[in-house]
Image (cartoon, rainbow, N blue to C red; front, top):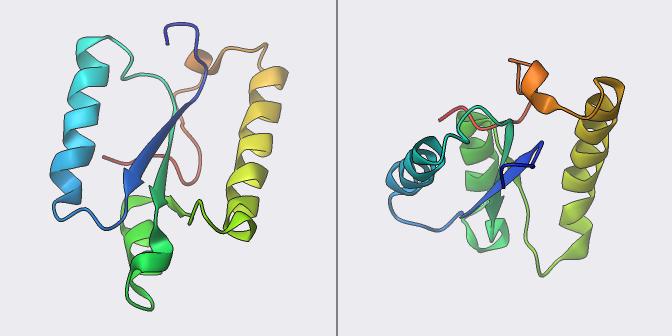
Length: 108
């Protein structure tokens, strides 16, 4: 992971304590000195949430919502990845040069 330029942090949207799960991953990343890497926070299983809740979660956390079993929900994530990777290429391949993780990145 030390060679990574971008991390996808995938969280089960139905998890009872999202904050604790996100914080646990952030703690591990920090202990590995990987907390400076840009992240895209992704909530999976959004199709299993009550109507409107996925949008609220994504807005609250600056995340993107998907349902991995429904490929059409992956299009926005793929588009975001393409955009972020294009920026990395323009910057010479190192996201560590940028202190701004960009839109939809983990805010935790």
